[in-house]
Length: 393
Ligand SMILES: [Mn+2]
Image (cartoon, rainbow, N blue to C red; front, top):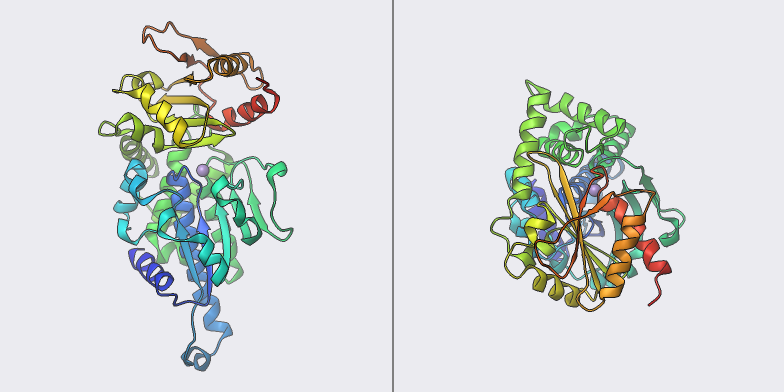
């Protein structure tokens, strides 16, 4: 894997390629996004090699000036923020991908690449472009995502190949797509056996996203299960359940190991934006985040930085028992914050079951525990969007 990453990054830097395909994950850069981007790019590159051998003769390839196509995974996070993605860094390092060979958002100049070369974009683990990447839509040729499809924001060409299915993990869809494309060239499991680290990474992502098919969390689907079993038929562990359990424990521990992160770093760890609402999600309860020194000041600063008015903080703890909580904070728009909090409390479909907690924290923010443990940020997003649509000052 490191070899692939190093070679592709070098070819990109030295302009030593014919056509470029960028596989872009989403801006939360969670494990699912990073794994989906890296593994799919590696597969496309492998597939290209397999097909190339058949269609082009050796003499052609020996011709001077012949250049290969390259497939480059890009992690949509600044290099300096990579350490915040504790479980991603842990998992990729474990699988031999060294940091210096990974490509991050600020390592490439997307606009220059689009202007000067034949460039295609593949989106994995998202299908709504972030504001900074609005201009990418005409270049998108393929989308693989596990979010419910949002037609309103669909600005892509008609022939954009899309694999969109609501499953627990985008890695499931990536694995399925690789399986399907491989069987077309009659190499059913060759990629998975040739690159065991890719097989392992996909397995990690699905196990983490579905919390090993934990019933309480209820994120794993039959399709996720089918893919996990398929990957395990290649990994061949002595004990499937034991492998999943120990993996989940290690990944969760790596993800929640935020003891060394400051409040402002935690706010950047896994954050999304809807309209003018900043929605960070923490691997610890919000209550705990608020105890960090300067927590609310850090939120206020993050709001300014991201050009937002409100913050909806979401927290969760997996062990010992699943626990979720939330808080709304807007230092300069108290009324809007109250309205949003009320909107979320009153929402019936879905019902978050937010319980107002006595603010012994004496904070200027509206704090709730979330009794409905099944709902995550994914379910908050459309409710937020709807609130913003109807909100008037
Ligand atoms: Mn995902």
